[in-house]
Each structure stands twice: as structure tokens, then as C-alpha cells.
Amino acid sequence: MHPELSVVIPVYNEEAGLANLYARLYPALDKLAERGITYEIVFVNDGSRDRSAEILADQFRLRPDVTRAVLFNGNYGQHMAILAGFQASRGEIVVTLDADLQNPPEEIGALVDKMREGYDYVGSIRRKRQDAAWRTYLSKAMNRIREKITRIKITDQGNMLRAYGRNVINLINQCTEVNTFVPALAYTFARKPTEIVVEHEERTAGESKYSFYSLIRLNFDLMTGFSIMPLQLFSMMGMILSGLSGGLVVLLLIRRFLLGAEAEGLFTLFAIAFFMMGVILFGIGLLGEYVGRIYQQVQGRPRFVVQTILEEKSGDQA
Image 1 (tube, rainbow, N blue to C red):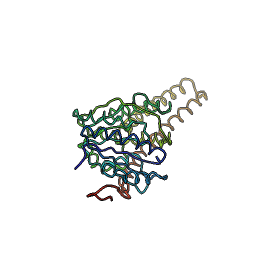
Image 2: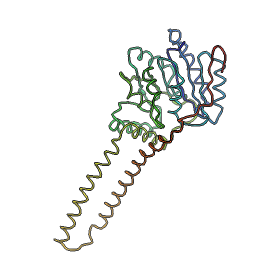
Image 3: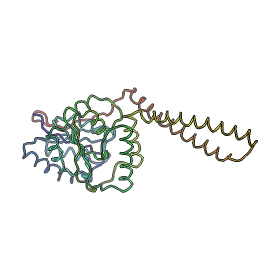
Image 4: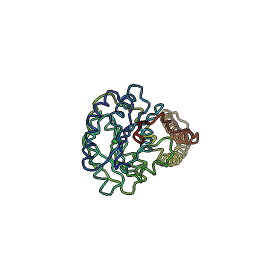
């Protein structure tokens, strides 16, 4: 029988923290089971280079009734791991959770209760973020920019503790994007989304897998994957700059006829030229982002490759 709840957890080099995760996750879900909420946990090992896969296999052997493990043959990224977990999940409610315990497993029950009120997508907002200050400020800034560009209203886009209804999961499983942002994709399919406030804790072990560059790349994927507004903005900017440039040429011609030849303002023209070149290069780079997405999509390569799935079948371990 299919469980009511599936918890999908991507794992990448989390050897140091998995024992702590097990110690809190299973008791929290067992308490939900006492309320009649059947569950399964789907771990997705995203090509970890440490002993994470072995530790997941050991845990599967300890709790095969509620534990499943999807093992990739390489590293494909957090969101690809989540998508693989969605494909393997069987629950009517699917909750995503990071393995670093920054999102307390004890909050899963709050998301399930909210879903039972009739919502099909429940996001979460961290009450007090425990990240570095630069990550907090950058995330808030990108949230505002992303909402303006994509019209997707996610208050705390960096928080992966979220719940999805089976109708949303089925639609996501039909998508074939090579690069995507799962919470935003789910928001576009949800009929009745909402958000709740949850606690946030410091990472118990290991280091964050997202560098400054990775965060920038993630936001580029988010904005270019869900809107063409950046291209439209650059088109309008190009028209405005063309008009201003034409006006500047006319002004310089008038000054030349009235005042004669002059060398003043030469460095101002250089500054304007360099500014224009910067805008052009940024626009070319932005266009390249869209072309790159098209190139990756038309290649038709698998988004991820599953090496094996550890799960219990007909009373036997597979």
C-alpha cells in the first residue's frame, strides 16, 4: 500500500551528519505514524565522494519497511536529486528536507497538517535564519528581484523544507527541463499554495555545498528558466540607449557648430563608451544563458542516471 507521506532527502557528502539526521528524523516520523500517518523516506545519494552511500545502505537494512535509497552514478545537483526522489516517491504528500538538519525534521508534521487543510503546496519561511549574514542579505535581495521578474511568490526561496500534493508531483514528473528550480516549478502548477513559518537551526556537521558562485548560478537558472523578462528589459534598454546616443550626437554637432572644435569632454565620451560596452557584454552574456539552456535541452541527454535503488519488494530486499 502507498504511504500517505513521502519524505525526499537529497544527500551529498553528508557522512558526518547522517547519524544525527537519523536520530531525529525517524522518531519524528514515528510520532506521525502514531497519528495514523503512514510514511516512507526516500534518500537520494547525489554521487557523494565520502561514505554517504554506504551509510544509507546500512540504514536501509535497519529500517527497510520505511526506507528507500536512490543512488546516482555521479553528481547531478540538488534539484536533480529532488526530481529523482519525486519519481521514486509514492505518497500523497511529498515533503522535501535537507540532510544538514538546518530544517528540523520535527517541523514535517506542521506541513502535513497544513496540507490536510486542502492546500496542494506548502512552502516554509525560516523564523530566524542561521546562515552567514552575506547569504541572508543576498537571498533576500534575490527573492525580491526574482518575484519581480518571474511573478512567482516564494517568500523564502532558499528553504527546501516544503510539502507538495500528489497532483503537483505528477505534473512535475512530466517535465523534462535539464535545469530547473523545483519550488518555483511546483508553484506554477499548484492550485492552492500557501506558506508557514518554521524554525531554522545551524548546520550540525559538514559544510554548505552552495558557494557564492553556485548561488549566482542557481538564481540565473531560476530567472531564465521561468521568464523572458530579462531579455525584454534589455531590448527596451537598447532602444532607450539608442535614443540617448542619437540625442548626444545631435548635441555634439550643435556644440561644434556654435563653439567650434574642442577637446573638452573627451574622457566623458570614453566613460560613456565603456559603459555602453559593459551593457552590451552583459546583454550578450544574458542571451548566452538562454541559448545555453536551449543547447542543453536539445541535446536530449538524461538529466540524471540512477545506479540502483535500494527498496523492499515483496518482503525481499532489492
